[in-house]
Length: 223
Image (cartoon, rainbow, N blue to C red):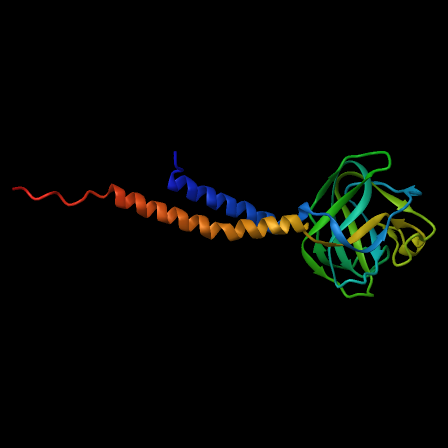
């Protein structure tokens, strides 16, 4: 039994919506181009209850950032990242906001897990300048995992209310960089979008054929 043209058209619209949605949803992909990072090991931790902020300064070599991953533990914590321009203020957390990430829910203990924060669009950076990823806790308790002995020489860990020079030898465990969809996903998106016009043309031809078949022919002349 053939597919009802109206149903088929709706299916095409739904498919297009899903495919286009996948194309714009970079949050599903990990950081694939790493610029700056500090991967540990864990040698310390700090914690606070919302509302509160921690941060990590870094000096990029790329001209943009799309996501940052942080090693975090916490209890029912909702966290977002504000990307700040420079170390500003007593605790280094007062810089102008250049971009704000999605919110992430953290509810793990022990050594914690890596949580990725995605920015809606690429945030432009100037290579060699200093930027701060400020972790803002809006609910719950957050415990960032740190390293000591200046494991990351191009930045430092920051703690709300403490002078940033006091924490010069501490660093957040983090990875920052760009998000690139996997090649297989790109091929899927391209093939899916390319096939939509062909399906539409076929449906139109079927409609025309059915209309022609259902149109009554001229009656035979009466003798």
